[in-house]
Image (cartoon, rainbow, N blue to C red; front, top):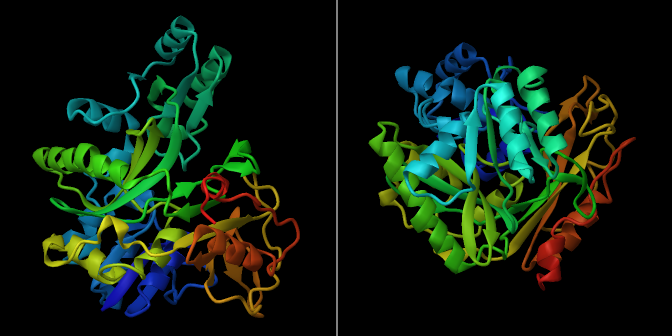
Length: 426
């Protein structure tokens, strides 16, 4: 089978590694992915359809959210090309936070209390009236940066000013969702869906803050591990029954059956899961730890993605909750300046180092020069990880690999997985 993966990050490199049994190309790709002679941007829908036709691909796997929200899957299907990912109508679960919150309210899916405003003055008046910690979110896509967890009214008012008046996220700030702050522990729960059925993948936990101890500004993610012990078998069953099932039924009732991967961002408190957000694609960096575990349990990744795209998950044996053998951890190695403006063009040393069995390196913001050197080309540069029998072993392997790779200004967190390791994940 010939597969085209759309995207350029560690998520797409990880997916390509999981599909190594078939012929894979990635666009626009990075220094480590097999790319077409003329790479196409992920938001160039015409170019992507033409590339898929030219390359005669059997399946397109869409990595990032932007082309999904723009309707790439619809365009591919109109051209007779099979695609893994939701249609534009189904991608509203991520494309509009207001849609997602109203959808949860309509279908009885537990989430935080909220209000939606398309007027900045009304949003500010609501904040001044409430006088308590609130979360302010840009309604549309903002590259993961349109969320402010405000501990004071002043912070929340500033967020509204930035999002709705200064328009720092453009049209994504046409409206805001203001919601209560939830307590508990976050987790990332991915399920592969075919419109009616869903296969769960190993639950993961991301680390958003740039610094150790969860300090500093938010990022796209500084590392992840799986499986996340906070998602017990009981909680996983609750999520499948109370969140995934109602979501699939609700989207089907709306005439937008959900096919692709549904990434449920959870907050878990006292054994009860609530939905923070829906994403309609694989998480990054979570994919870097989920894909290595998929190889260890149940059907192969290609089988699952292809069956979901065809609406035929019923033909496969579903993985069981206790089928995830081992653990995986990935540490994001970032460029100088990230999560602000990253410095680009620094030469990366150590990529050819001999690493311990179980170690893996997924490229994200990298570029290969004419002389063969690999340089930094983005903020999150590499996801470097380890696969082991236990989380403690995965941690040791991952950080051993991190220590072998260097470039000027590189920085990373040294405490990925600290919550689980404290629980006894060694």
